[in-house]
Image (cartoon, rainbow, N blue to C red; front, top):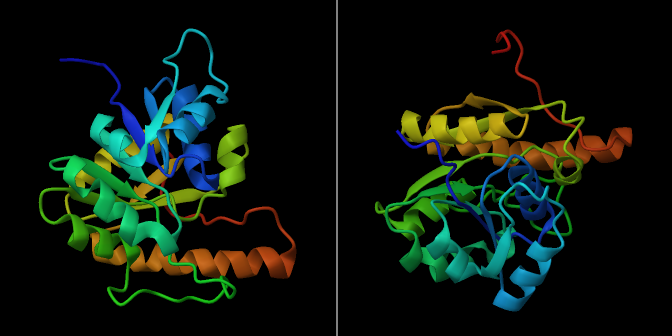
Length: 222
């Protein structure tokens, strides 16, 4: 059985969370493709990621080409552009596992929970992509800047998806970059983590902390 790591495409990979995930996965030895609005911006950004010479060098291209290239595709774009970008990559992700990290933040009141009509940004993505793509949601409550430095991430990651096997794959990816991830039920449950992000933003402001996270107690470390 092959032990080769899957190619991970990060749609919106030049943004805060996308670049943090890209750096973390590249450092862990995964082939990473950075997707951006233009191929030039994606390629330039990929060249600036710091990776050991003995590991696969990240590459960059357009969002559409990145979606085509990846075995697993991460969507890390702002809520305001999510629908358009999902539609753009839809022809390129048939049969693939999609990890949607989108949080429905609506400026200027980003500390107020404002869920979409579907109750979840990830559920909206699954509806747009149709049954040909398998959407899992996660990584909502991890501070992006902490991913970039690769240490001091004291929080759990909740993973949502309708197929437990797909959730397990994403849990494995999170573990590979030093995070504890937990099965949190079907995709519809992602509403909870998406809403919690706004709550955490408010907590950060109220207590002047640098990226508050969550811990699920009562579960032994594995």
